[in-house]
Image (tube, rainbow, N blue to C red; front, top):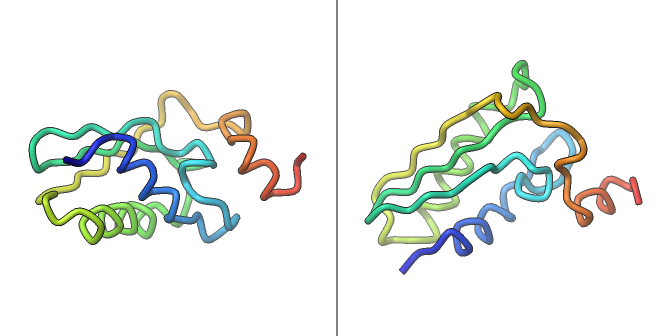
Length: 100
């Protein structure tokens, strides 16, 4: 059975191509909800004007659908509240960016 932990693990494989860090360590993924064969991802972008939003939401959908054959539908909801900030980046992400 798919769990939120499994989904987040899978999403560690989706990198923001502009910064080269995965979307989980960047703090872009707010939640992963599983109901039956449906997965709902709530996430944000670093800025509402991010040109990568279509690319990243499709990458999220594909990563989950390819990894878990029991998942039939993946919805990705982009939200702007709370707004993203660099403080949301994990320690691992900060190291990858050379901030630590």
